[in-house]
Length: 559
Image (tube, rainbow, N blue to C red; front, top):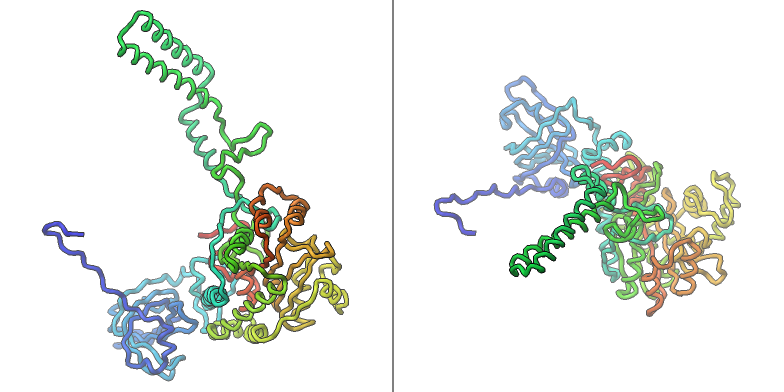
């Protein structure tokens, strides 16, 4: 873009050239002598020599790139103001300095600050996240009230790095296996699970509020208003007739006709406005008139991308999606969220055995990835939250999963030498205590349970020949219980139609889904895994609200 005559060129600040703390700590003592620019937040600071001619301070700074802190050594004469402005926990610092060896520092090196570029000060008395000892963490329940700040803590920053690595590992696993990454819609008109616990998406409320405000400013016309408008229209009509009878000029008649048309349109507009009523539009039977809504029908936030994923698998072969899903389940338990992230995969020409093989391979891949790429974070979890976290990952990553039928699982649970809170009988949905007993006590490793009763599984799962069970499978792991759920999908049109009807769902809503069975039906399978469940398993944390950045649950949707 050319500058105007006499206009001075815009000058931008040079790039920051910031070096991540991870890169410095990974380089260790070999970094000594290197000049770098770093930025981060003070986790702990201490001033020494206060009041002396040459005071100095040590700052433990973290920038989120790794679990460890970089020790900064700052002299008072470099800052030019009281060092206390730098030492409060939570203070942000952006500095330049030279790395030097220091055997007293935790990592054997520290940064000698030569220039303070920026400081974001903190009121220590008001800052809600107090200083903790290195490697220690604040109570997860306490910091849950500070979702906008809790990522600065040892615990939550470690969780988010683990989450990031699991997300990357997911993409890499499916890419290496030849799957296509596809994007399924968040807005849907179908209920994949048939549970009815869905968030409805509608513009009817905003439309109603807008109409109510408009009617206050411009009320609907009364019948008297309409009658008066009709009289005006009649008079305009009479005028046109008289002009034509009197053989008036074409211009006079044309003007009168235009006036008549406008008068008639005013009547129609007033009659239409007289029908407007405040509130949600309803049909004559009192039901909501969704044909007035944005999509002309009921719409929801998705509980699963599976039905859409199946349509793509029946053309592209092997596909997966990774995104947010939603459940309007009014639950405050440690295992439930209203919004969570699902990894879902579908593959054509595949049966239940293929489904179990992919699920087992995927979980083992994730565990190996964390052991290779999140050693520091897992070690922190071992020290602060779950001493078995590392061994659990090693076990699952290297041990073949046990595979048993649902019927066998029930038999084992019935013979257990303990009393469960939930009754054990054929036909129940296994509870978490049952799943953990199988994985932690009986087999001491992951277990895949398959061939579940049809009454506790979704309509799309393939009905077995006994017509009592479906080709479904769940991957159960220690600490968490169910981690993955999957099945071979029902590819027979007549059977699928009956299963939809038996579930109390309208056939017409699933017509396109059934088209897959009408036109080139194919045996196919798939599974889904909640990312948050995997993080709970990996970290040993107990509450699912602590493994997602901004947890949504009944009564809470902060930020």
